[in-house]
Image 1: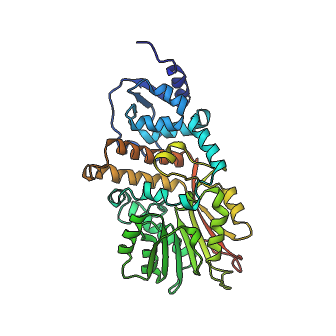
Image 2: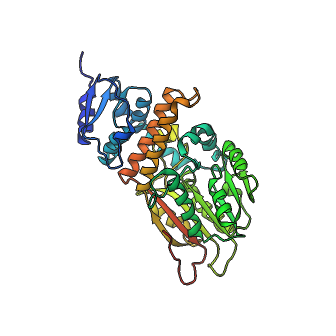
Image 3: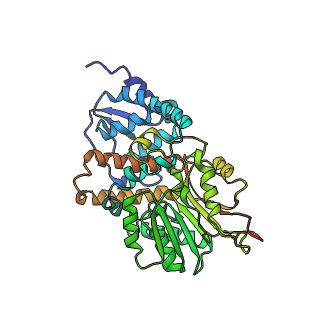
Length: 394
């Protein structure tokens, strides 16, 4: 059988990332125990089952890599390790694919996160089914990075993160708190039970809202299905945990204007406090990875530090900027371990192709944090600057 014309080119590129290609090798299932956070999976092997893969990678870049894995065209015993190798070698920059170019053009011409598009990610991702997220996220349905500084398991890491947020905001009994992108309501529930606050949470997901209302029943918490741009009412404090990735650079300024107008004046603190918890990028971009956009988070993008600072200018003083990106790698590993154990008991609608898609999503996310291509930031903002300065909490 003749060798595929693109095979040598792909093998050469992958070789630069210390990835070896093996053709028609037996499929070896992923074993989460073989992929610790510092693993480089040496030797790293891509097992090719379909030689059409080579052309697909050259033509489609990261979109073709992810879709071909979903289609079963290749396997590897350590998926997050292989993807780490590729990102660490910057191969995604050398083989961007036509989809990345088209997405870049689209993002410049259109506001992909406009108000009428705001609910798309809720319908396509967050409304997949609470059973999937309950299986993956642990005791608390918190779909953002845990704080592992003094934790050794996922549930403790998520509780530590929620408490960190409350301490950074200086929550006190009687305060009214806004949660932009409240998910399944765990953060507001925690704040109400531990710190005696009341609050409003907004989400673009119907399923999340229904679950959150049941979770917070009996507490002074209101859950709404609402776009953040509609908010115009007073709060003492505000936070947003893992929602800003859906806002988009064309809307960053508007987002912070909304957050600013919703904070009551408080002369003891220079105005209310707002905490932004978001994944961040080392460089300023206008779009996300094409595979992530198509299959996981439509119309998403990661902000850079420069974009955040520009959007806040004149509206907020940045009191504290706390980065703990490596904690997200560990959080994702815990989510993967949970979902792999639970998969046999999940409904049949989550078929094998969906399983490979979800496995690829978690592994690719681990790789971005492990390679330090993505960061996790918590920024504490005040409208006027706190008199005497802000005492940072860790």
